[in-house]
Image (cartoon, rainbow, N blue to C red; front, side, top):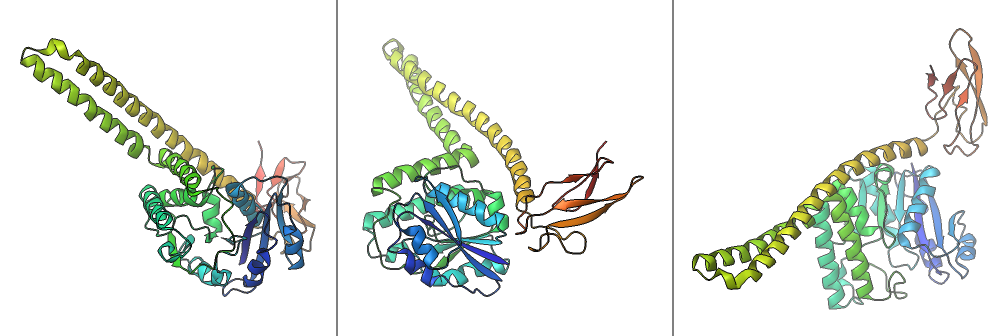
Length: 376
C-alpha cells in the first residue's frame, strides 16, 4: 500500500522545512510514504527547499491557480503514481504532521473512506469569537447538505482512500474542503473525524484576505453544492415561502371584497400575483434542477469508470513481466485460426497508460486487464 502526502505551497520556504521534517517516513500498514509538493506559482525558494529535504515528486503551476486546483492536480498526480491513500496537509505547518499515522488508520482498517482532522476550533487561541462562531455555523450548514455530523468541515488536514478520490469531483476554484464533504456525504462515503491540536500560527492565511471574503466564497461554494445535490431544500423552500406570501394578500383582498370594500385594495392582488409567479418559477426551476441532477449522476458514473481505467494498477501479463518496473515488453498469445503472439509496450515505471495492441486478426489486448477483445 502506497501513501502520498501532498503539500500545497505558495511561497513556503520558511515554514516548509518544519512540515517536511515532521512528516513520518514510515506508517504502520503502509509499504511506502511519498511526499508530493504542489507549487502553486511560488516566487521564492520553495522548490529548492523541498529538493534539499529529499522530495522527488512535484506538481508546478506557472501562476497561482488556487487551493482547489492544487488539490485536484495533486490527486491526479498521486493516483497516476499508484497512490492508495492521499493525505492533504498545508505548507504553513498549521497541522501536526506526526498525526498522519493516526489519520490514515481508519482507512487502512477499512472503517472509513475519508478521515478529517478536527482542529477543535473552539480552543484555538488566535481565532476570534466571531471566527469561532462562523466556523461552527459553516460546519452545521455543510452537515445539513451532506447528511454528516462533522465538527470541523473547513479543516484541510485529511486522508482520502483511492476509491473515494475516484468518486469525488472538485469543480470550485476557491477551496475543495466543503465541496468534497457534501459530495462524499451524498454519495454515501464513510467519513470519520479525528480530534487534533494545531501547531502555533506561523503566518496569516493566504487563502483569503479577510473573514468576510472567506464567508462569501465559502457561502457561494455551499450554495452551488446545495443546488447540485439538494435543490429541493433551496428552490423548494423558497417556492413555499413565496407561495405563502402570495396567499396572504389574496386572502386579505378576499376578506375586503366580502366586506364590500375590495375596490380600494387592488394592490393586494398585484402583490399576490407577483409572489405567485415567483413561486411557480421556483418550482419550475426545481424540476429542471432535479433533471440536471439525474443527468449529472449518469455523467459522474461514466467519469468514475474512466478514472478506474486510468488509475488501475498494471496487471501482470505473461508470468508477471508487465508493470513490475523492469520489463518493457511482454508477449501474449492470441487464440484463433491465425494464432500468433503480440507485443505489449508497457511504461518502465508501471504507470498505467499503455495503448492496446492489435493483431492481424482484428483482436485487441487491453493493457490494463490482458483481456482479448474480438472486433466484428
